[in-house]
Length: 213
Ligand code: DX5
Ligand code: ZN
Image (cartoon, rainbow, N blue to C red; front, side):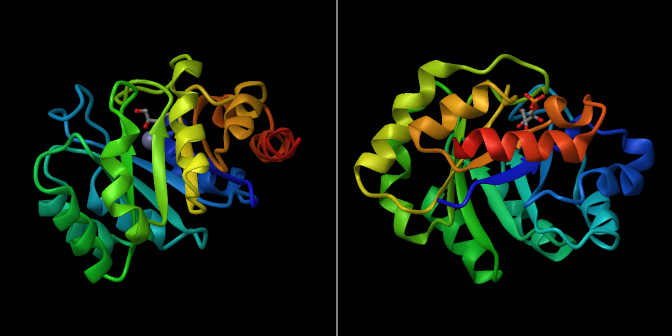
């Protein structure tokens, strides 16, 4: 399976986003964390910043919406340049309606689940989703520790024959990436591990290599 590395710019220097993006030129996806201070306690960035960085980066954008009303904002993020729009099953509104809205905007749809949410909630939508995001930390902040206890959710998805992308997000580093890959994940978000390293592109290569073995 294709292993993809998606650095999270949440861990980057927001004063220098263009040069930060150049440091991760070997990424498969750019993971953009959007937080509204309501669905999660933290606030990050919104559509205007996504639109600005889209102009200086050719790598597809994986936009992770940690917001209460994804249906309301999906169009703004689509226009801003999101390629994949990922929202939480725990957010407000009907999951199926939000998936359909994202697809109608011509974007790939993904659904995320928090660590304590059963994976079964995504089952009705699997044929429409490009990706399922299994959170490996509580959403809201970078730099937290990887929760191995959520791995059975990934195994369950693969056992039932799901062949789409499974993304993990939170606490991914060159060691934990192996655990997640073994469980069946193939898209790996890494914020701190990439941006706090001396060579972000070197760390991306290491993560990809460790995921493959
Ligand atoms: C957490 C975010 C993550 C975060 C990961 O709510 O969704 O994408 O940036 O950060 P690290 O890799 O530092 O755990
Ligand atoms: Zn994220």
